[in-house]
Length: 197
Image (cartoon, rainbow, N blue to C red; front, side, top):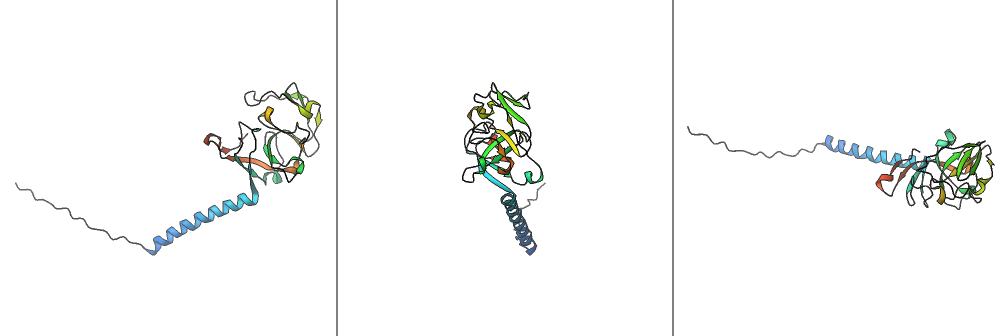
């Protein structure tokens, strides 16, 4: 039996560019650009960006990293223990923002005895792997009573941090706190993301 050979016929399809396709592409581009613009305005209007200077907050934050600061959070609520905040030391607008962790709240007493933090006379159980025993108690060698809008802050890298223990910084007034650090970026990929604690 003889087989019939079928020849393949390729038909070239005409590309159809309809006005609705252009309209769809344009709308996607417009809404993407609008979303980026809106996000940028929210960050500029309600947030702030700062650079971490020094190793005082390592391993949580590293020198040269950038952080985003939520300036609205403390309008709605007050700072909490373990919040990482950005503040101007003594309200000095010529200084860079210091980034530290709140360890004591208004009305509490703070003291550092033998390298250990005490709040209201109670030894604080802190992560020994994260926080070194403090070599220098600074002004917290004597008990400090915090006022109604005062906070005591420490760096996570306790022995390489200029913080509330230093006489030139001391306790931090709530009026000098710019906001809560909520996101970090820059540096290694492992150290990018939300600052939870």
